[in-house]
Amino acid sequence: MADWPDFRAKSASSARGTGAISYENDSNSSNPTLAQALRDAAARGLDRLDAQILLLHALGRPAHERAWLLAHDTDPLSEGAAATFAALSQRRVAGEPVAYLLGEKEFHGLTLAVDPRVLVPRPDTETLVDWALDCLKDVAAPAVLDLGTGSGAIALALQQARPDAQVHAVDASPDALAVARGNAERLGLAVRFRQADWLEGTAAAQPGGYALIVSNPPYIAEGDAHLPALRHEPTGALVSGADGLDDIRRIVAQAPAHLVEGGWLLLEHGHDQAPAVRALLTARGLADVQSRDDLAGIARCSGGVWRAVK
Ligand SMILES: C[S@@+](CC[C@H](N)C(=O)[O-])C[C@H]1O[C@@H](n2cnc3c(N)ncnc32)[C@H](O)[C@@H]1O
Image 1 (tube, rainbow, N blue to C red):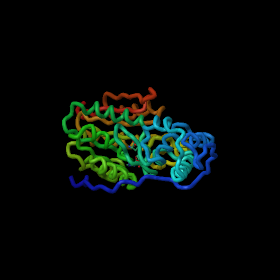
Image 2 (image 1 turned 60 degrees about the vertical axis):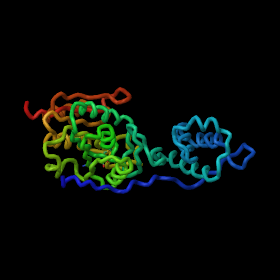
Image 3 (image 1 turned 90 degrees about the horizontal axis):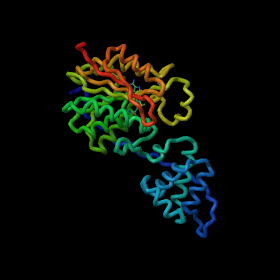
Image 4 (image 1 turned 30 degrees about the vertical axis):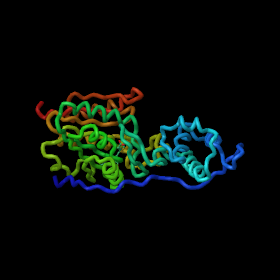
C-alpha cells in the first residue's frame, strides 16, 4: 500500500505560559493561598472551572482533582506555581482555549496532545465516532478513512475501539499531521496518515474501497459571527466558503467513488446545515440519508450509505 506510508513524527510539545501577576495576599504567608489565587483569577474575569483546571495544571496535578483543591484551599501557592498560574490565567482571559494551555484534550477516552496547529477536538464530535462505530459493528476488519484528521481524534478513537480496522487519515496541513502522528505514536495506535487535499490523488489508496468515510471538515461560513471567538484555532480547520459548505460539497462529490457497496459516508456539520447536507448526500445518490443529534440535541452529523447497485 505504497500510497499510505506508515510514517510518523514526534508529538507536539505542550504550550505553557510565562510571566507574572502579583497577588493580593490576606494570609500570614508571603504567598497567596489556593483560594486567594482562585478569587484573584475570578476578579480578572476567568471562569471558575477554567481557573480550577489551570491552577491544578500549575500545581502539576491532573484536571480531575478539583476536590483536592477544595480540601487544600488554605495551602500557600509557591512562587513558581503562582507565576505559572498567573500567566496561564492571562492567556485564558485573552481567549486561548484551555486545551492549548494544558497541551492536551480528552476525546472518546483518549488523551490527545493538542496545540495551535490543530482544532481542539470537541465533545460533540464523539457523536460522530459513536455513529461510525455503529455503522461498523457488523463489518469485520473494516477499512476506514478519516478526512481532515487534525489531531487525529476521530481516526485514533476508531482505531482504539476497533483494533481490527485498517484506519487511514488525511489532512491538508502538514502541521496538523505532525500532531496526529505524534498522538498515534504515543498511544501506540497504527493509523496511517497522509497529506492530501481531501480525496485528490487517492484513487489507488484502498483497493476495494472503504467501509466508512468519516469527516469533521471545516464548515463555518466566511464572516460568521462566531469566528472571532475561535481566532486561536487554525482558520484552515474552520472556514469553508461563503455558506460554510464548500468542503462538504467536495467531500460528498468525491467520497462515493472510494466506498465499498454498502459503505457509509458520515459528516459533521454546523447546527443549521443538516437539511442542506442531507440534500447534498441525496443528490449524490447516497441512500438511507439521515442525521444524528449532538449532546445538545441538535442535528450535527449527517450521513448516508452508498449502494452502487440501485
Ligand atoms: C474541523 S477540523 C477537524 C479536526 C479533527 N478531525 C477533529 O474532529 O477534531 C478540519 C480539518 O480539516 C483539515 N482540512 C481543511 N481543508 C482540507 C483539505 N482540503 N483536505 C484535507 N484536509 C483539510 C484541516 O487542516 C483540519 O485539520
